[in-house]
Image (cartoon, rainbow, N blue to C red; front, side, top):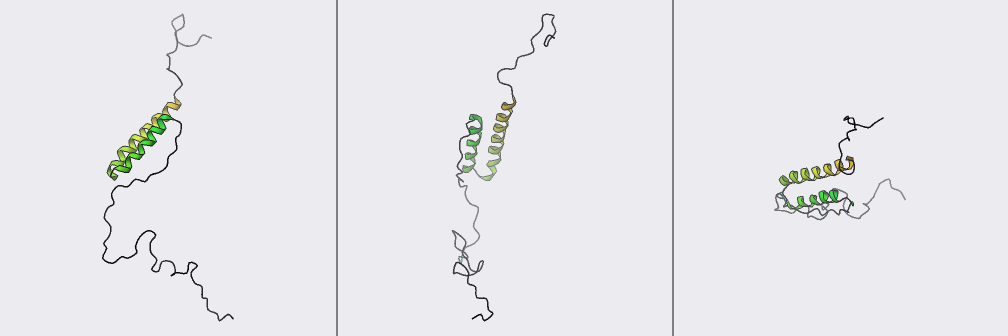
Length: 114
């Protein structure tokens, strides 16, 4: 029989969301604890696959160096990686082999004969 009240319990059987819920992996509201201080650098450990391009792989591999640095040291590594990636991209635009100057024609002028 419906008495007009909505008695819906939370699906997980606990308290409603946000009321006394514990944060995942932590202790919510532990008495006597202050705000945590700055954390030491911790490796993120991202999994990176090989690209097959030696210069790109070397530059991306350098990103792992930031795992062991304080935040202030990240910029230097990121700039170095950016420079390495730009160099790899610029190399793709360059024609293969050494660029040769236009050959001189027998009459002394440069360029192609028509």
